[in-house]
Length: 225
Ligand code: SAM
Image (tube, rainbow, N blue to C red; front, top):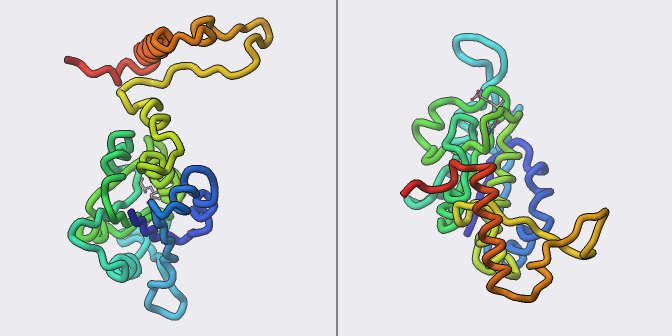
């Protein structure tokens, strides 16, 4: 899978590629992430990428020409998903992450300032994704979130793929509680069932805990029949 990111601040994204599962996915050549400096696609000698909004008002808008040039330089195929990260997009979910992980080529466009010229949206963008109902100063953190979440569900990126399948949201449930050594800490003891060695009972306890947590914290995740 290849992910091309168009951004004014590639360094913000680069840092996250160097750690953990994401780094391993890149090392194992399951994922290629290319960062592209938007300024390199500006067509004037000042490398201008933004301008004042028509109609007035505060803040700058990213110009269409450099974004069009950047996307065209990446040779998107008919299958390429061209994603604009925006608070106005569809909310990112685990299901959406899993669907995107099956694609072979994504292009992510990171906005800045007031956002991007609407004509980029109209002509180029295939998907708009938001990471939540709040406004960030740029799309880079949202791109980090998306790339990280995708890397975890790529087959063979995790040493034990079942681990990702057991995480919250994968089965429309939140994850169960976890304990590690010591058995007793500040008068709190690890539940006996986890020490029993009885795998069936442990699985049942974990499932019951997941269901109870989901009902308590996120009843909206439980599918109605
Ligand atoms: N004026 C825009 C609006 O109200 O919809 C917000 C612009 S924001 C300050 C600058 C850029 O940050 C956006 O173009 C987008 O790329 C990114 N961004 C901000 N919040 C985001 C979110 N919740 N999810 C994804 N991207 C976000």
